[in-house]
Image (cartoon, rainbow, N blue to C red):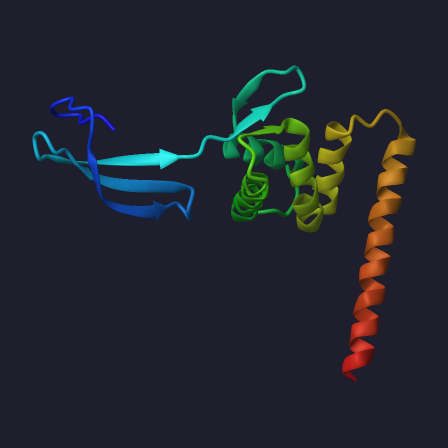
Length: 163
């Protein structure tokens, strides 16, 4: 790392710390030439590869915007949307790849959004999966109903075990 004061080509790391829940690394450095200290911040850049082949940096803000549109008029608060976006980013970063297809980002949104609000999920899924007909909506609604029935059956079974 080049010293920002004297432009010496090398520096020594004095201290390293994680920041932003491990997303950033702050390093305190010392220049052996001029003796001044400075801080650097390292961040792993995650790129999203769109369907067109264009690559752009991952943006939590874009996730929040898309989910906010799906949740418009629904009883979902901003904190829940921000938490969902954080979960999506953690899921995507956990894959460990430097580049991730936009399709996988969409898939990472669907699960948490379904848990947050089924109507918002249906709105998002209809755009994301390009629903063409009522049959597409009906099929997705039946999947949601089947999952709700399974959850209810699991709850009844769990309640029976604790009695």
